[in-house]
Length: 388
Image 1 (tube, rainbow, N blue to C red):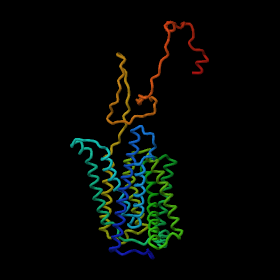
Image 2: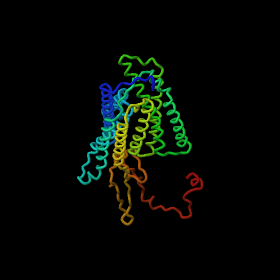
Image 3: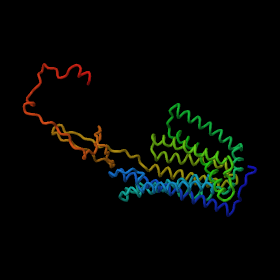
Image 4: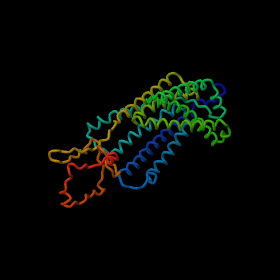
């Protein structure tokens, strides 16, 4: 587009790509470690009778600090590298979460059983690492200066206006079917998230780029476009979180992670190509190799998440041998269940009530036991029956 300044392919461009890539990888790794630490804190508290809340533990606060650092690194990475290069790097968090989850399981398997269970995860990790190398190597290398003037020119350009127009129509149609027609399909919900995410990545890159330029000495915070982009960024992030929360109540988290990664990455690449013109100066070979790397990451993430089986909690139950009057407790499920300490019984499940004192029956005299009611006497009045 005329009037937009690009940096030439050279040492500066590759250096910026390298900085952005390393920041994104580092940020995704920190977020994965932080989530595992916080989950470990929750599990530890749930398995003990510690009365403290989760936010009063050191491990939870450690995870929160790592999360903030990781998201800050991801945010800054958008200022250096193209969207098409940063968005697929979310696969790093999937690989890290898979490895950390395996470490935290602490299970011992026989070699054959181990290979049978985790061969798909290993294959998915290999494909994801190979795809990451391909799209990082053949990704776009042209950069534009993210000044307020350049961003305004991109916003009023006809490619982006046409893209936003089509996106708004698609979003409204999907929202209509989701809200009015009860189309609670996973693809519909995550398409809404991906459409919002494409706007989010555009605004995040613009805000991060203008902040970096302002820190470097070229003030950009006195332009209204900065605050417009900031408000759009916050709004789209909030709505994405709302739709993702609704999806987690309906579908398995592994399926959500896979489909959301594929859709969000695809829409982010398209948004970067349209708004920031990231592929205008790339040849066909580089574009094909980049797309091959993205497809390899998609397939790898699918295999990693597919291997996570949906585990159904086993509920203990009791059967009674009527001939001998001996109860049998069936509490040997194939998966260990965390006991519920609410101190009350529930139908169909056993609850640990060892700490609850048994109720004492009143002692009756022999004369009271000998008394039998008259067969003609009514045990209940009509008023009692109505009350019951």
